[in-house]
Image 1: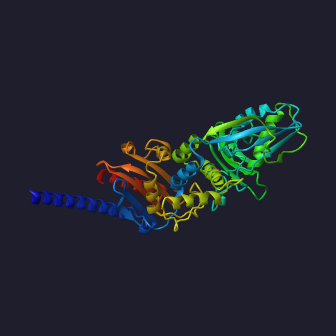
Image 2: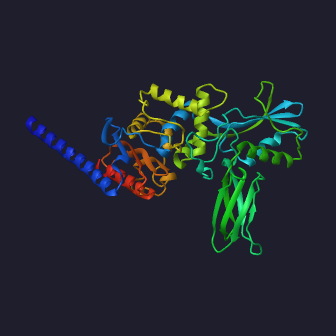
Image 3: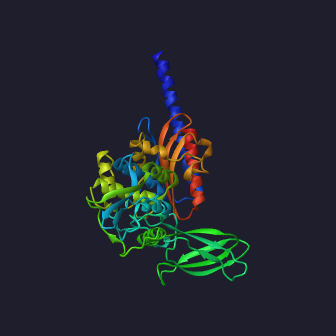
Length: 444
């Protein structure tokens, strides 16, 4: 009887071995047929049930992760801030007709909310102080590309976050005028070189001409119907002050002095505050890949972790490194320079990412990863939407995806695919990623 049992077990193991070999061969064949440079793709798939690597390819090679870096930095930041953390913008009365606004770098603060907050300022106010020390004055991450200056997905960020750090413009066609009408309701000072004409279709191009001034925009093309444009704010402090002044003057409050910087004092009397829950940020970072929110949260957490007056990139990176040390994650070879993965200076291995995912498989933050049909996974891998949660990443020449997959046979997997190839189009890279994930679902 024992002999029959062991013979059956041996046959079963051989079948599994052949299946695993066939999957690896299938992956190899498809990768070869895709035309991707074999040195430019890294894959790591691990079984979370037994902590074994099922499949790997270049998994120790360092590559640019793009936005899947958010699966590394977000859980660490939230562990430091706490799930009950709130972004808070606060108003205090200082006395002698003076007030102080303590900024919280709230990435969701709007001009409408600022208006409500400053309604607590009396009409005889003559002086307003701004406490902007919550973050340092660096508005972009290390290695961010200067030519992304007009990319609304990569706006500047800092203590003065307001209106998503975007200026809203409306372009109106005019039949009886040579050029379209540009409306700037924010009153933020912008200079327009307007070459937009009324036409049968809308096709508008906007460039910033810094050779004239940082606030000079070149607009060209045609417009057929009223069209809203969003322009990244190039001076967060100035934009905030313009909106604040407008709200005050709407209430007939005219200050004698310009805004002055001051830390909140113990004698300042609390008047009101505006808050937003951290949960909104977690969802926005992992589902929608919001870079500005990701960077803000990471800096805030770094400041808290290092007990600093102002949050910094360096503090966030120290927080991340210490997290790795506490969890026995070897991060000696990788390089993290920002939270969002926007910088091309980031270098991470697929093996490191799956190890991180393995450690955090029970972390509640990871449940915010989108499944197919949600966020950045809206149109991808829909047939297996109940078996997959994943973060995607896209940069110039880079495509990536990482997350959790339950295979058809019931295996719980952590996976990471990074493709740093300049030849393949973004859509071809993503098709290759989707094929590998589908095969892993069906055959592992």
